[in-house]
Length: 191
Ligand SMILES: Cc1cc2nc3c(=O)[nH]c(=O)nc-3n(C[C@H](O)[C@H](O)[C@H](O)COP(=O)(O)O)c2cc1C
Image (cartoon, rainbow, N blue to C red; front, top):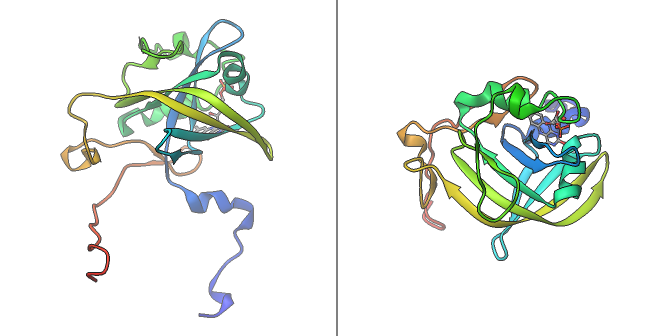
């Protein structure tokens, strides 16, 4: 295959890694408000102990809130809530009280102070265990202290996409996708 079959894309390399499951990060902030911010740059990094990484831009109020309270609820919302996911990622908790502006119903967490969003399909409670500068962002490592799923939306293999459950995957800008067809790979060595 010749190199002329490829087009330059370095400036937007990250779109090549989208769509991505998007979470909504709940924190308690220095202004004493609970705040929620959308974050699609998230990933699991360790099972034992359970650790998740989040890239949070330096400018986001959530960065200050994470430093302030050291804990976060990670809320996984349905594709039906894509507008809310977009909205929570488009204004800053520095300027607006997102809980009242977006009429968010909250659910108490069990192991941390920040509450979760009651409309979530799943909520992961976590505590900050590391913070590393990375370009214009900081990479936070969060240890999972509790994870809960809404009844009927997941089994031990994950979300029940075949039963109509779907999660918000962030494409770019205002574009979101749901999870598409299921493909089952052959067992190792059998193809
Ligand atoms: C779908 C979506 C995903 C986003 N993902 C991230 C992300 O992973 N990291 C980040 O720093 N900002 C991300 N943003 C932008 C922040 O959510 C946005 O800057 C937000 O206003 C920050 O809120 P805060 O100032 O209340 O923390 C995302 C925005 C949207 C709409």
